[in-house]
Amino acid sequence: MMWRLALPPGADRDHEYCNPAAVMDVERISRMRARFLVTCRRGDPLIDRQRQLVKVMEAAGLQVAAQLEEEGFHAMELFDPAAAEVLFATVKEFINA
Image (cartoon, rainbow, N blue to C red):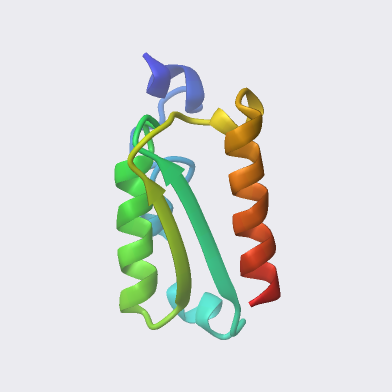
């Protein structure tokens, strides 16, 4: 039901929203010479797709910092101040690296 509610009518799970690795232009992105931060939690319905995205990006030689946590749920940081602080610290560390 979550997929049906989140995707446009007629879209399937290969839509860019839920499968970015399938539509990512790795060559174009690699020219940006950027670093990427990907965070996700086990309770997020998209965690498998985010793991796949990280693998595709790493295989393409992109710099990826991935934090795929075992505990939690989607948007946990909005409801749990301690989780928000951890995310803020992670982003700050990533930016300052």
